[in-house]
Length: 625
Image (tube, rainbow, N blue to C red; front, side, top):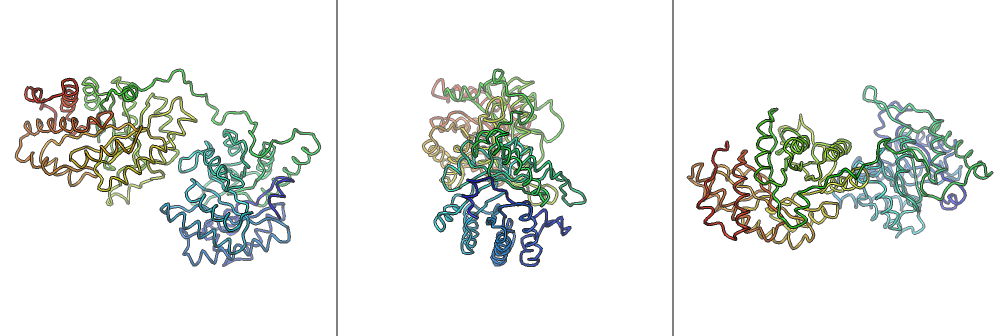
């Protein structure tokens, strides 16, 4: 069957979920489904025929997870060959199309991901494949290159790309599907694009309706419904008739490539075939309005979330960001969250910093991967109780996409307008048996997710900042990553502390290499020789010039703190021409030292000198160490 000719006549109905149906038939977890093409070929052939017998016009090869991430390379080759031959033989008697099914390649570097897709594509091309389905994808890594490879070898190939989305239209990587579908179809490499898996037919339709996909030939293959887990086994218990009606509704809304994913059995596809045929007949007889062209705006009007639209009239803009954008060189002061339940002293310190002139208080998210009071809750409390602004750090370490979205929705509603997105410190090896990292994002993808969420769901977008390590040995690579962060939605950076000539030079390079980005120059005052040695040897991303460490030798607390003030003000003077503001980091709750540094920087900017001010200034040494 020629898929293009078929689409001119009527919608194309695919088969259902091979893996889940195989697991249900064999009472297994579904693992090893692909290997069954070698070990149980008669069973896989029978499943193909079951779907074809009830009206599927296209089937997928049993190769969804057949890649080198899951099987040895030699075994992948055998699985592809066996699966292709079984599908082709089954489809012959029904004149149905066979699609080479390629699932997501995950856990590899970008280069290795591209190479793996190329390997899979080449193997299928050798076997004679002319139709390809890249399904259940979460981002576009390697997909364009794979499609280009197919087009070079088989210009008339029909290529579909499909992304797994949640009810809100985001993939697991936090990318909005609408953006992915438009980008990939706009490349001219893909014939159709759409969504599959994760959610059921009704939620899938609602998610699609919420996107502007005019002009995109849509492919939609939802799950049968929500799964349930009983004794570590996953079951789908949904009504095939309900699924079939949902598929017909998608067709009536303009979707032309339809099918099923997890939980969809031959019964589900049979009901989809029946409902589709009825809808097609009604359209042809004129009893129902003609369905729109593929990818047309879908006419269901119920709001996706059932909630109210954001009221932009009550949004308060960030005074910190206004000052930053106006060239006012604001102060951001980091105050680490407490590691205990007491809050009074912390809020008092925040109030002191606010009174001393901090434009915004930044709060680390469990620094050092050790549990501390939540940075986002503290940010909301500071804004409510102190009255100043706060910017929570948000790491990628501890939250998946659902938790991240829930957190960001709450922050937006609470009036937080700035976030600092960082990948997050690695959990120490000794803790990994009891504490697990998530790392569903890196900071670049998280920034893109936050940006898109601001465009689609929030009353106002966040101003997204990132980290810039000016102490990196290979700073050129840091600049390259920073440029990617800007492309993903960040507006500026807060740098690691500048405590060496190399860091100053790198900051200059950042100023030249990141035009348009706001840069908050990092200042962290060492307060003792011991503190210097610790930072140099045990704090990632920090480097102190040897002469700074030497200057603290033998100093008591009072002279050491005065030296800390002098070093910080000298650093501010050196980096002043290259930054848009100052990012001060409070050591050991010494908030009075932070106040002194802010006073000194203001004096320096007003008079152009600091020598007399430092000599006459008494450092407040009453803060606790």
